[in-house]
Image (spheres, rainbow, N blue to C red):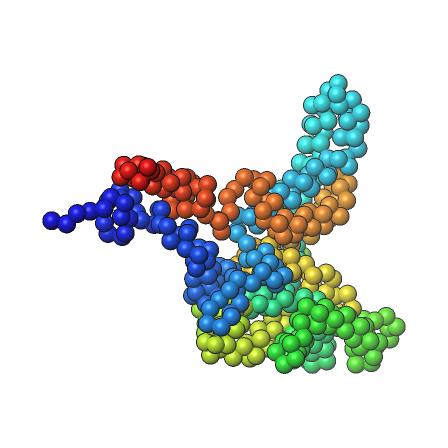
Amino acid sequence: MSTHDPTDRSPGTGTDPHTDADWSEDADSSPDRGPEPTSTDRSVGGVADGGDDGAAPPAAATGAGLVKDESAASVAQRIFSGNGLVAVLSVVAAIVLGGVLIAATDEATIAAAGYFFARPTDTLAAGFSAAMNAYGALFTGAIFNPRAEGLTGMLYPISETLTVATPLILAGLGVTLAFRAGLFNIGAQGQILLGATFAAWVGFTWHLPVGLHVVVAVLAGIVGGALWGGIPGFLKSRTGAHEVIVTIMLNYVAIYLVQYLLTQPALQRPGSSNPISPLIDDSAMFPQLLGPDLRLHAGFLVAVAAVIAVWWLLGRSTIGFEFRAVGANPHAARTAGINVTRATVLVMVFAGALAGLAGVAQISGTERALTSDIAASFGFDAITVALLGRSTPWGTFFAGLLFGAFRAGGVAMQTQTGTPIDIVLVVQSLIVLFLAAPPLVRALFRIPDPGQPGKNRPGDTRPGGRWSRRRDRHRAATTASTGGAA
């Protein structure tokens, strides 16, 4: 009959009513053991856990192993792929603070604040009323206006929201796709301009049959954006030039290039001294979806198709897996046999093509003539859209709808309540601020960090945790029962 040492805590002894992992000494005291791996460290760059959840982990390969990279790119990557709840709460916090700003600048609220200590409820009621009226006008201007005459008037707000959201979604997809491959595509603005330029030239110089003409214009816009996006991808892969610097510079190159071309006979409208192109043919225009009185066009359907295509590309295709692997860890991807140079060029070509589609949506959807400011600020807003969408295709889609609603409803908010339209920019800026500081959002709403084991989570053996204290009590009791305390 074998004797059993009650202090023996080896696996399988059966002396513990709890699992050995709850108080394993190896988890704390082994000097060779690193920190407990997170879900993003359990595969090569987290790609095996992949799917399309936007969780591209910051990791770099050193030799045969992976070490955590705390570079600026790693920090930005965590910001872009942060928790979805944080993104939603960031929007909520930004809207609340925007309401506070609206109330603070409202004349009735300011007047009531003069006797705040005598009747504080008057100030609070006036501020709340100002914020609700402004956001109510924002809603009716962006979603649905029940007071409008006729069905067309009621649907006009949602039509404008979807129309404005179309280029935001397409350009945001370009930023999202590049980021999933570890690249920062800040050049969507220039890619939109080049896509619009190619599509406009085809639209007013080629006179093709209805149906075929718009397809050719779309393909031309894709080619223009892809060529402009491919330049930083090629320079990155061949020379190591940082894509952020290159894409920013190419934005300005595109702006001044288009301005120059619009003064040349090839693009300038005949008989005009203004830098504007001729109108494209009707056959090159997207068909209207809700009739001639509403601006919503088939470009929105193209945007939805692009979202599905990018979702499939990233989550279901081999090349999408390569993109995500390179984005997670290019060194490990190269070791695994992936052509990193090819992936870098291709992903920027695809990203530019998506942004070029946004330019087509502007030319063939709403503007019909090329100008140097046809891209507006869509290229820069696309970065925020991708950020809010957590660098996922469907997240980018809904973030584009939200920002489209802000743009469309901001005009109604200003005309109906006198609230400056700039408040929309303030809310958008606050969203970016909160998204860039997830710990601040978690602190405001008192939500735990899913990336850190909670102190009350079973299996947490960190010092101070409940299971750590339970383990210590168990060890002390066992030692005392065997006389080890003496």
